[in-house]
Image: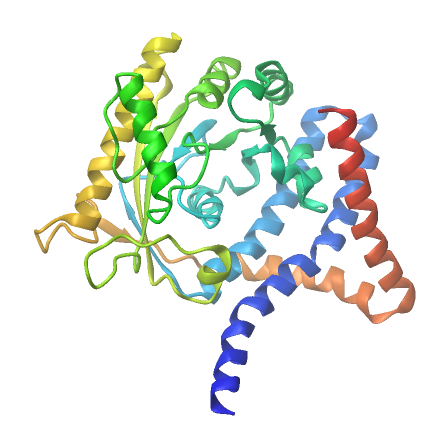
Length: 365
């Protein structure tokens, strides 16, 4: 009986926030759809301005759960600029929660609504979300030979030409680093050896295509690249071995006590645009990440292990930045669930969004 209660309580830690986040999606999409319809006769700049505000509202509600609800400690090394900038955000990639880390930094710069992602192609099939992320300015890419450079470049240029602020999140490794997937790590290291690059231990060899296209497509629009290295505390076993980073459900179940974020701003003028030099620059940045993570997980110095160099500043997120969004979206959703007609609209929105997303990604591959 007691064991069942413990298991039930543990599952509620995840299902409660997941239900709220998914449950408010139809109301959000309906609100956004109304604005999209009304804004068809307005300049694109005006549409993007309110779209960013709406997106900020939804993602603030998401951060209520991933920060305030979980109680995770966010420790930041380096100085985040106080002013908003147009940037490419480059980070190591370990788990599904990495997307949330980008939001955590963006909200501390009041740039949450400007976040747009470069996503792997399979994610476009997510009901509602997959289609909406594309509408918000995100780009879907395929790996290796199937990578469509023209489509991605056109998408980014369309955004920048209408003056849309850009906080473009890219994970150059292309897939998640998992210390238990030895074959993936071995293949990545073999590729580095073949290309004459330094072999990395705690990250995968970065691929340059998406980052380089983004840099060239938006060169006149960008202020900087944010080079971010993330480590999740609690991923070091008692035997000193690195364990997989927490998934979103595990993160929501409060299995990650602290997130360590090493932040480095690189001015856009310092980044080479020529492909060969850019590839070298990108790999050198990941060599730095690899050294940071090696010390974090393997250092024999008690002052270096489980920490990054420099002063780590605790950065709690105020409830005032997240709770109002939670209340507003909950207020929009509740009427849909209390009446029979509202429930029909609710279910219909999910089905319509799924169908529309399927048509969109097939009509405009």
